[in-house]
Length: 275
Image: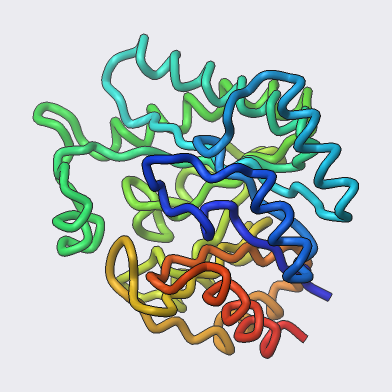
């Protein structure tokens, strides 16, 4: 049976004041969810004592910490800046290990030639490379950077789950190009159900065999961050069942409705198709 959890992001949405992870753990327990995905930028710190307290609290509530969702960007011409990003990912792999999380969410990064997220969405996530560079350059930087992280992932036993999260992973072909080129058991895919905008179900099917974690987006009350999508979860779960997916379904509630009602509505919706 598939297991259902939520990202701490479902309760926070990048508001100026960080919402304590402890609060989310309590709500996850009250809502009867099995686990939690912690947004790295929502942590108060990476200090060992703090991470250990979160780990202990989750354990005492019977809650798995199954992923640490980090932000990184390897699409960067500067060798030094890419090296900084590699070191950031390595530190996050250690933090995930300390939390007891078997995975981190990984991004490819993007060119950032379109600054506005709304404008990026209008263009379906497609943006031009920096002058003098090509997408091939970007893919090479991403692949090389991830390869540098593989020994650390293996050392800590933490899988890097590459999300279809705009940039070079806007299309399934880009996700697969990276994963197949790195060719490691320590790099797999995080399937986001809302981030393919061209041919969603065809592309979800393409990445499904490599998927180790799924983000299930919902928008009760209207979208708080971008376009409100209609996602056919009956179709999504048929795709997952076709590849015998056994992992977590991680809720990403992006609606304007209060998460204390929006997340339970999402739980009810998803459980209808999970059995």
